[in-house]
Length: 112
Image 1: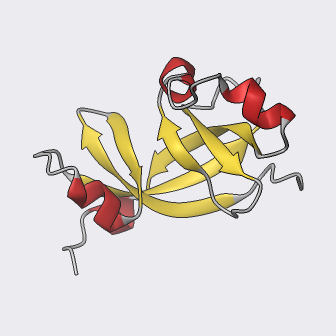
Image 2: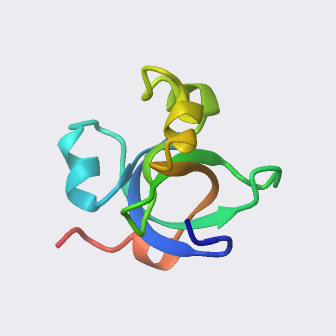
């Protein structure tokens, strides 16, 4: 698996009083049907020991962007019946730490 440190993606999330949740494409966030505002976010991969990391995610070995993005590592681990380590050991992907920040100039734009 290539080293993606420093990689960045534009995604969307619900802003639940400062907690960014349901991170992904706009349709994915909207599908959750919550009343929280949907904001554009910059998602940056950081080292796993970087304290500026706000979320944890899975980067599948066949994909170029992270999925299963959670603000807590424990929530991510619940996505794997045998834990993420079993999937990593089988070469299916890696656990990554992410830093999310709202893209201010785009967050206030009307939905299209």
